[in-house]
Image 1 (cartoon, rainbow, N blue to C red):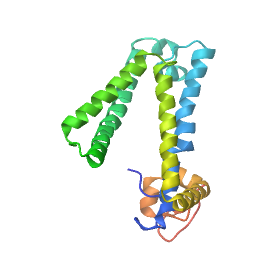
Image 2 (cartoon, one colour):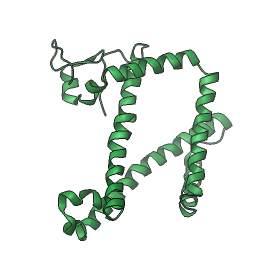
Image 3 (cartoon, rainbow, N blue to C red):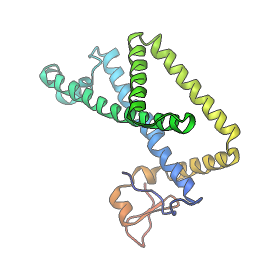
Length: 214
């Protein structure tokens, strides 16, 4: 796991801004707009402009060459990518089943054992299959819109009926810390963190020294 980027004591009010800043770093612009979207842009360019197949192997065509990628090696690359996607999806879905079953147990008193979790998994699987079979313009589009509206509704309820001032203050401070410490957190390595650590957006390579990331 990524070590904390700030030296504030865990569980305190002072640690909130740093924790949010590091969350924004891993789940914000750097994680999605750069690492995620960049791959999609390259693949779309190769497919729509150059006519290459819309498959993972296309991303390695400039490196390995069209001849190698078009053969058995390309099939192996595609298969490994599918396995990686499945492995990365199964875990969160299983974790979601435990979360939903726990929520049903706490709110409705339903048993939170394996039976409930299996039912949740079956419902999720049915929704996934239905959305995939009905196509991108029907099932997937409806499910995506419902997901967005549901997320906005939940956020609105939490913002209105929850600790509004605390949320605004924490988000503002966290986002400000994220902007001021962006390059420091983006270039921080585990070794550097263990040797010196970061404090207030600054990292020290060794104890007692201080330097900012480029």
